[in-house]
Length: 278
Image (cartoon, rainbow, N blue to C red; front, side, top):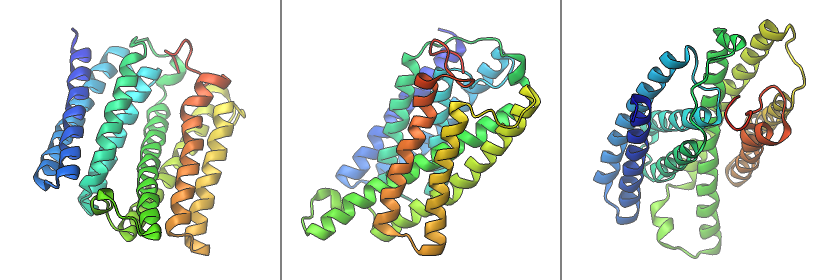
């Protein structure tokens, strides 16, 4: 097994261990397990970053050009943003959502063809890694917003029906979840905006035009509009709580289609050719 494959496998295993620790902390109310899970995730993202460094050296450029690489990089961004968010809110319960999700994404990545290809000269612009990093970090922030939204609706439903299960005792308060939702939206929207802008400048250097109305570009603009509407609603109309949670879930469904569905179904310049090339 090569160095890249070994680092990838170890990272995936570490995310699994962190998932177990966070679930134990949530279910059995053992905060110590969550604290250990947090440090396990820190080790995981360091090894994951090492994996990308080796891959970058091998490919001769930014190693996020295939479905395998894209899913892996998304998992890394997701864990990184969660750890930063956890510094503020200390939400072990969200670790029980994030760590398993990162592990599942890594499994899907492992099931995709792992082929290191020589980068197209178009992708060797310095704008490409900037565009990719901003876009993926934005996607990760919105994934966390989605998770907070789901937890909010679960909590809200139990409070409204006055039927409290064990899950109710495990979840943070509605106020905390709404703050997490807003924080993730406040982080994700600027990142997505800068990702689109940097992508437009990169497209101009590569193809001589800022916008080609490629399916990926079109759906990215639609998704951006949804998140812009949500942010505008929060700041001007006062969208909070349940409405904001529902909007986060709907917008993230559109984001998933933009991230994967468009690439695999609609074609265009961002298509994964044979599920291997972006």
